[in-house]
Image 1 (cartoon, rainbow, N blue to C red):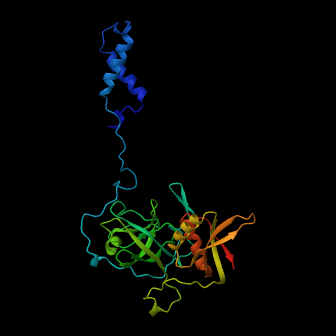
Image 2: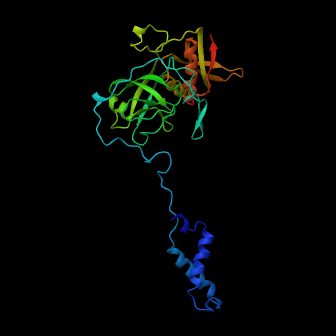
Image 3: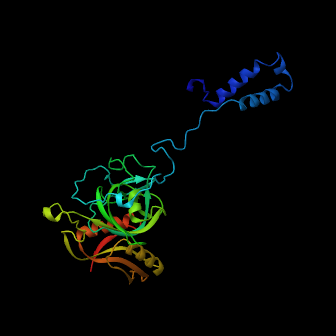
Amino acid sequence: MRGTLVDHPVQAMWACASRIKTTMPRGALFGVKAPLILLLAVLAGCASTPSAKQPSPNAGRYQISQDRAPTRVLDPSEIEEVVPTAVTRTMAGNRSPYEVLGKRYKVMSTEEGYFERGVASWYGEKFHGHKTSNGEIFDMYKVSAAHKSLPIPSFLRVTNLDNNRSIIVRVNDRGPFHGDRIIDLSYAAAVKLGYADRGTARVELEAIVVKTDAPRERREQPQLARVGSGKIANQYLQVGAYSQRGSAHEVAELLRGLTRQPVKIEEVRSSEGQLLHRVRIGPLNDLAEVDSLKARVASANLGTPYTVSE
């Protein structure tokens, strides 16, 4: 029982010493060796005193500490497909910016034009039955996804680049927040894409937007986001200017994994005569795509790009 435990170590020692003292002959504590005898007795007596129970490493929000697959086998043919619909968003899951593990993330204002390639992981039993970022209940047997910066909810076409399988997922959660992964798919989605047994896969993500003003008969066919309504003339996103060409090439390769738009490196001279390698994306002709690219570049920790004209 909690009332019988002595929580403070000093109190425990005194309690132990008191118990031992009552069993010793009168006058034994007053000899030359009394302090040493008392210390040894206290240590010996307290060694058998039970300590307070340590908290379980699994205590907290989740019942298990390590994620894992379900015990029953999922038949891919029995997993329901996701059908994109026009969405109405609230602040649930869309607070921006937000912070996880000391790092800040910004939610995109729109998913239109979003395209990215990278590594996908999956999550399962540890999170099954718990709330997602927008308050829905995560079901590992259904197709869903977690993304760090896409607005919630939103729809993505996810293609496994290793086997060319493709599915549509609905984003309703935030993550993943470790490693180089760009998306976490539910266990069911990983089964559909054929990588549940391996844990990760190289994937391509592309936003799907169903326009609210689309004719009713056309809404059954999801519309891949390509171009927004705001037109601009030959704008570029400058991501950075680097003194080392190797650094510029490294950034350019990372950017090519984020967009299908051209990424180019230009050599220029600074006002002090220094040779710089400027990395730019474009030309771009759509404001929505510019905003989406800015958010993706920032989310990938590649700096804060700005728009320039040529």
